[in-house]
Length: 408
Image (cartoon, rainbow, N blue to C red):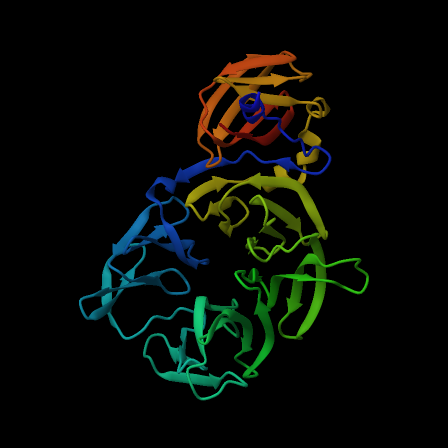
C-alpha cells in the first residue's frame, strides 16, 4: 500500500493562478556540464567552465567560439575576446577568431574601464586597454588592514558603467557579507545591504536606464507580516520607486532576478520549488505563466531564453500574454497518475476528437509525442524513472502544460 501511494501522483492544476509554458529548444549543451561564469549581454556571449578550461559560447546558437586554459574574457561589446598564452595576454576578433595583438588589460565595461579591489578596502579603476589608473576609492568606515574580500560576483556595473555593485565578505567572519552600490560620479556608496547568512542578494541592473531591481524580505507599515518584495530603485535620484510584493516567505536564499533586454518583463525564482515566474513591469502585474526548472535564466530577450545549464529556448511573449485565453476549461479536473510503466490521464473532457500529447523531462527533452483519440481515460505505456516531468496537451486551439513528479 505504501509503495502504491508513492507511485500514485496527481498533477496539481494551477488553472486559476498560472499556466506552465512548453518552450521549444533551439540548442542544447546541457550534457557538457558547463558552469556559468560571465555574461556579455550586448554580444550575447557567455564564458563557461568545465573543470579547469574556460569556453566562450555564442548564445544565439550554442557554438563554442574559443577554449583556453584557464582564462577567457570578452570586452563589453562582445566583438573582442582575450586569452592568456604563456605569459602574454592576446586580443582576438570574435567573428574571425583571429589574433589581433598583445594587450595590457581588458576593457570589461562600456567606458573601457576595468575594476578590481586593492588592499581589501579600496576600489581601483583602470583603463582596460592601457592599464592607466583612472580612479581609486576607499570604502568608508573600513580600517587600513585586511578587513574584507570580494565574493562572487565581485563587481557588476550598470549599462553606462557609472554604478558598480560590490559583494564583500568580512575576513574575520565569513557569515558577514555586504552588498554595496558605488556611484563612480559622486564617488560614494549609495546603498548598503547586509546579505542573509547562507543566502544571497538577488538583483539586476536595468538595461535601458539607471535603475536596479533587487529582492528584499521586509515588513512594510501596511503589512501584517514580512513579505518578499522586488524593489525598483532609481540610482541617479537615490530613490526607491516601487515595492512589488511577490511572496509571503523569504526568497533571498534560493532565487534570482533576470530582466528582459527591454526592461518590460523580468523573470524571478520562487525560492522553494525552483519554478520560474514572470512579472510585467509595464502593467505592474504577475504573468499567469511559469516555467518549471532547476536552473535560472542567464539571458532573456524578445525571443531567446538561455538557461544556466546552457539550453537555448525560443519563447513567444505573445503567447505568454494571451496564455489564459488558450486553456481549455475542461482541464480543471484533469488527473494524472503513473505506476508500473503506465501513464494514465483521467477525467479529461476534450474539445477535439483528437489531441496531441507530449511528455518531456525537466530539461525539455521530448520523451513522448503523439496524436491520440480523445477519451476520458487515456493510457500511455511509458518507462519513467524518478524525477520531474512536463506534460503538454494540444486540444484544437486550446493548449495546456503542467508538471508531475514520479517517485519510486
